[in-house]
Image (cartoon, rainbow, N blue to C red; front, side, top):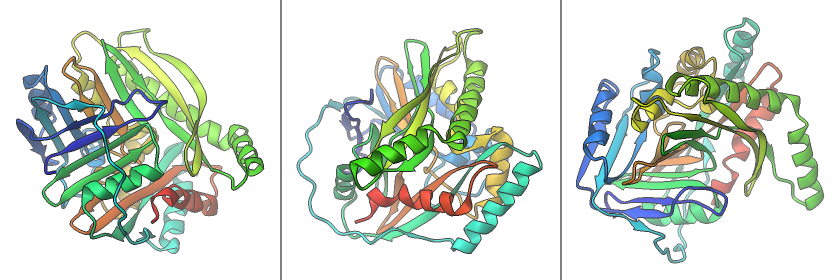
Length: 366
């Protein structure tokens, strides 16, 4: 299954179910390569099916901030295919084993980073930042079998699988980054998380707490505002609108709130230029974005890679659809790495934020 890509949506998403293999061409970029190389590749294969990812670091570097080096994965990887299959069938996933995901950084290190963030917020450096840390695991299973097992426990709207040699990406993302169709760009940022309850009564109570939390609402509105600003740079004047300011998404282990923002692309902006311009996503960086990315570099000891980057596809008709690569496992040989995190504001509590980050990994545990 080398060079295979799979995309699987659900009944509430507009993410197509697609599989493709045997690309006719591919492009890998390092952090030092200019984004124009990707633009040229995509324009060259207009009319073909394309799939690829942009790492968090590549997006952040375009803002002019320092980033950690990427050791194992390319900074950008795209493939062009002559054909693809819509609505492929998948058998039941094989029973496989993988180890429990466990945190790499100590709780002490997490608390120290959290305290520095709160100090920055009080100094007026930024309003909100997305603070993340990695979890590790191991497996001897084939990447394709692992993906189908993870998918079974994460019936999300924007999942993707990419494999190449001994590298694989398993993205079980509930979050759409941007979709561009017929010149209209739509962004759907997620901000605000509460765990699901063990009973219907618990569930209802937790949903109510999420909907009435001033802290979670402030996070969401800040990021909607940031994305409105991001869209304003690439859209026609006056065309950017907030269509939904607080909607609910129900997942296996958590509730989320999200917004929907839409605009009309400027005539001379290619969809891939829009994707590059928006990267990294506001919901996984912070507000204001550039300053947040600088602090992320200072506080997080290693690169995020594809986690909190973006992965997706471009259809032959030019429609572009990309997720935010959260709930995303990168696999190198037998080693698995899963990033987790959340938005920190002045009202955040470090115990709650740390617990929330681990709650997000609950549906990935064996």
